[in-house]
Image (cartoon, rainbow, N blue to C red):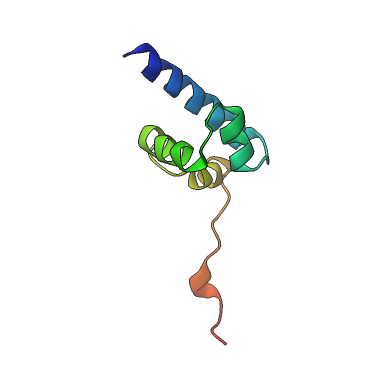
Length: 74
């Protein structure tokens, strides 16, 4: 593992902890973790953690994603 890969993984894991423990916006967490571009954070997070930051937050908290199929059509 290169120093850059180690740094990236460390930043992403710290962001993951904040996603689990806080209600801060994902963009705030990404920028404070050292990412200047939200799309880069999302792409890197998904590659390392296996899912998007928002999905990770929901799953880790045990929240259920809204079931849009249960909403009646107008």
